[in-house]
Length: 349
Image 1: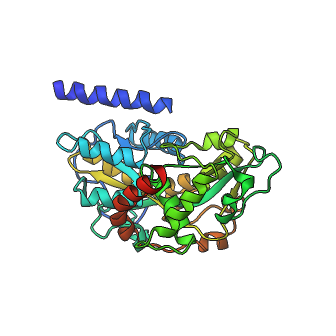
Image 2 (image 1 turned 180 degrees about the horizontal axis):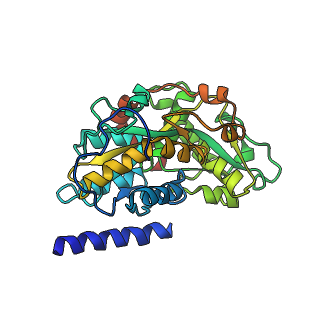
Image 3 (image 1 turned 45 degrees about the vertical axis):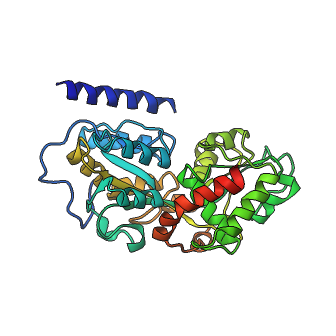
């Protein structure tokens, strides 16, 4: 009984924190035949304002009766919390950028699960052993508040951001903490001739960007780009489209002409989590036709199926997305800790 009270208290706390801030498909084992699911599934990193999660959680509850509370951690904070709670897991599912998903598997924090629909997911967006699977992706882009630029031209490339026109106007998430921050580092590195084994071009770019007044908060918010507090925010394209079309913000989404990369977000079943049956149902829902199309309505590219025509009409041409550079996510995951130390020493320090 005490354990149940502790679990319920934790879930209530997660729900309060979250306030501040499906299932037709093919292939995969699915969550059937595993016993009864609890009434709550905790996914670390599922904020209301991110990737249509608020609506997706509501649709899942209506269909399954299971509540998934909002949670405002970023990828780095989610994996740290799950590792700290390894002896007594509190989360059921981890959601994070792909390199964090790979790290969670390496650290033994997640269990293998082959969800319904996994057979339709491209091979480079899932682990063969079922330790992680992509649920959607975007690309690293510039979210430009045209009003806050005060007459300056809209930048079109990473090189443009080094110009005096954009002094003190650029913000990006700390690469050593957030998945989008590390993805930003990967994008600027490859755009400047770097590789998974050579970070010198990216570090040099960040040093030059810092000299031009750029800031790198631990947690960034697309809403601050919409308000003009961040005249230029480096983030995912879908967050910019959401602000532009759903919040009527003066945002232009720019996919850098000198190169970008995919930002892939994955989920993993937490090892020893309190509600594995419910967690599997939730993961199945995210990969289902319904779940994937709900992601797409937020301008996020699904890993199964296609973007609706009414969405593709509002975003950059497919050619811009086809130009995203290919990268080795496993090598990037292995390089992440080393890059973090290098960034802290050479840029943040």
